Length: 209
Picture: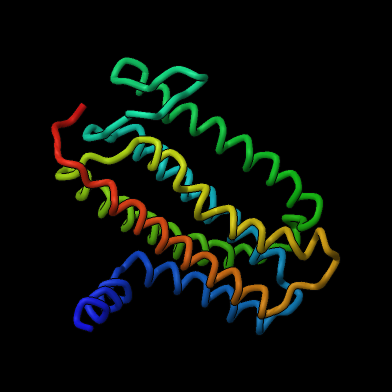
């Protein structure tokens, strides 16, 4: 069907998804050629997760056209008066999660064993993906009223499968493999597409809050 073909073409011409795939394929290629370099791959994924959170913080900080109905913080409805606390609440919540996670990684995957050049290249790929995604999102927000709670929680939709794929080998005591990285890539891309599908549904007409 033309609509399906158009959707597929739109997905695979999206610069964000291309950089996302490039970053993951780079990690798969690197691990295939350096089987003992799994710590480097894990730290790339941790920085990818942090980058997602940083850009979401700036999105919450700068969004003007939004709908906060049904969204609560500390059992209080979010409105124009206290909306300014939302990005900082997200930053603390998301940041603490990644701080604890960082400590866990430092114990299991010591930073000294990381290939710094490879790490920087991996971070660069995911950082470019986040920049492109952020710009496209800001363009969408000019003509669309978006649910504030959706923007707040969607990063977790992307990072939870990614972190499960990193932590499962450690918890179950099996060695990571190329299959692990392929499954992580699949989860990452699927989460990204679901993220944007949910994001695209927030299109009520109206004026900025």
